[in-house]
Length: 432
Ligand code: UDP
Image 1 (cartoon, rainbow, N blue to C red):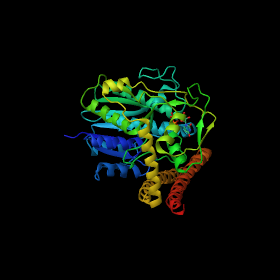
Image 2 (cartoon, rainbow, N blue to C red; image 1 turned 90 degrees about the horizontal axis):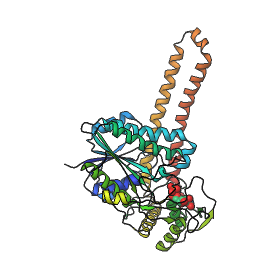
Image 3 (tube, rainbow, N blue to C red; image 1 turned 120 degrees about the vertical axis):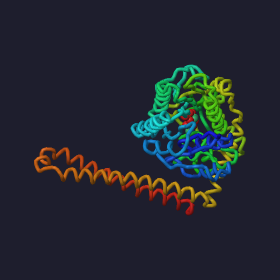
C-alpha cells in the first residue's frame, strides 16, 4: 500500500519542490498550508508538473490544535515533513513573539498529534545551517557544535531541533525523527512552473539577483567585500532546490524502511562546495547572458563569513548526493523569473492571487469574529457585575474593555487592509 506523507507548508518554495519529488517517488502526499506567506502559484504548478489534479490540499493553520487533530483524523499519515514556519530573519528580530509563537506552537501541535497516532509516526523537521552560527572550522559536520542563534528565527530552529529530539526519546519508539539542516537552497524546478516567490523586497541573494537582472530592482548590493575570504565576499553552500527536495525523499524512505541507526538522526543537506557572493553573481551573468548591475555595500549585520557543509554523512548513510551544478541551478532560477514575467504580462497570475487573497481574507474574518465575540463577552460580564463590584474594579475593567474593543477594531482593520492589499496586487499588474 502507498504510504502517505503530510507536507505542512507544502505550498511554499521548498514544500512545493518536495511534494513533486515525493509524488514522483510514488508516495501519496497531503499538502497543508495557510497561505500566510505564499499564494497558490506553486500549488497549481505542482499539479501541472505531476499531472495530479486530485492532489489533496488542506488550508489550515498548524497553530490550531483542533485543526491538526482533525487533519490526522481525516488521513492516515505515515510521515510528516514540517515546513510551516515563518522564515524572515530581520522580521523575527522585530517581532520575536510572533516567531516564537508561530514556529514553536505549530511544531508542538504536530508532535503532540503525530505522537498519539496508533502505530506511531515519522517526523522530518526542516532545520537550517543557521544552527552552526559562525563556525570555527569549515566545512561543518553534524558534530560541529551549534552556536547560540543570532536571531529569534535561528533560535526557533535550534529549539525545534531540541524539542524533536526530546519528544522522540520520550515517545519510546512511537515517534522517529530526522533533522535536515539545509544550507542555501536556490534555483527552481526545471519545468519553471514552481520556484521562489518572495514577498516584497527579497532578503535572499538569488531572488534579488534574478529580480535585478529582469529590471524589477535597480542594483544588487553585495554586502561586504572585506571579509577574510579569497575575494572578500561571504561564502555559502548554495544547493539546488531539486537536489534538496530529493534529500527529503531519501530521508522519508529511510524512516519508512526502518533503516535509521538512531530514533532521531541529523543530516547536513549541502553540496560541500563553497561559492562566494561575487562568484555567484559572475556565474549568473555568464550562464544566462544577462547583466546584474551590482555594487559593494557595507556588511549586513548578523552575516557569517563563510559556511559550507561536509555532506559525507548524508552521502554515505542516506545514499543521497547533490548532483546539479551551480550553472544548471542559476539557469533554472533565471527561467523561473522569466516565467513569472510572462505570466504577469499575460495576466494569468490573477487567478492564483485571487484565490490566495480569498484565503487570507477568510482567515482575517475568522480572527475578527473571535475578537468581536470576546469583546461582547467581556461587556456582558461587566454588565452583570453589581454597582459595588463595578466601582471596586473600575480601573481594571476600563483597561479590559478598552483592550477588547481595540483588538476587535484592529482585527476589522486587518480585513480592510487585506482587501486593499489584494485589490492593489490584482490591479497593479494591469496598469504596468
Ligand atoms: N547577500 C548580498 N546581497 C543581497 C542578499 C544577500 O550580498 O541582497 C549576501 C549575504 O550577505 C550573504 C549571502 O548573500 O553573504 C547569502 O545571503 P542569503 O540571505 O541568501 O542567505 P544566508 O546565508 O544569509 O541565510
